[in-house]
Image (tube, rainbow, N blue to C red; front, side, top):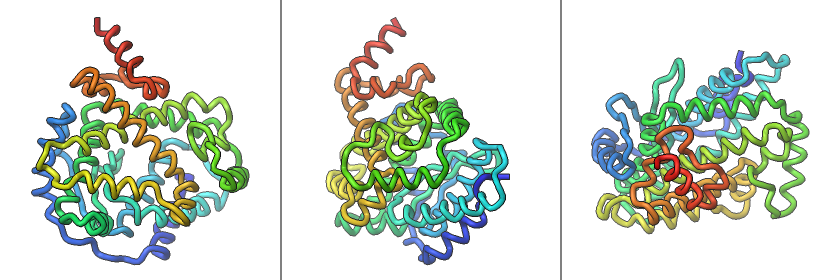
Length: 326
């Protein structure tokens, strides 16, 4: 039994998120346009012939993720949970996804034993970004697709990457963090100031010290995959996405929300996700300046992945991989 009730999570989403059909979009043509560009820029095989894609509403995106997260947690945490815990966790998951769904532009879902890989756009959010940037809807969709198709290329070309992530996440769960009440109280205390909460954000407040190594591995991998996708998206050849500088500016503003949105972002760990984007993108920019084409070596094998220290000092990573190949 999953430690999270997908049924309760989906019901919570339906109660909190109104159903609004996404703005229509011809995804087939757009994907076919973007795939060769991403493959050329990243040097990775996208594997798009076996990939499904969909333009989802906010509610559909949240419901889909409720099922995916419940299935993932069942795989990572096979032990049973006390009566009622799965339902409570499902309600919390549904509330989190309801808060997230207005912010998500797209997502690559790698699938699992019972789910095929799927690439999605959240059309309503993409349309709002287009409006904010003063850009055509299909142009913005092409830009977002470049990011998500890069994720597809990463996990398709390096199938070990997903298992590495799952292994580290399972290790974190096995560390038995503090109770949800302890976690909530620690998090609320942290919201009273703007001091840096450490490397890993809210999760670090409640995890035991023995999980630090696995948490560092997850943070490094996520910085790599998010930063790499951001780098590919922002270095597309001229003319592929006209006005991409304006799009980047608007996206950066969305990531650095203020007021109530900023508070929600801190609670959900978005401030750390922004750091992952920035740290990872800076790493790829640096290694490409030093050694054009070096980014393709990052996904060669698990040993090629940079550590957190190497992400902040790309020359160390370059020296290590050069020594290994000498």
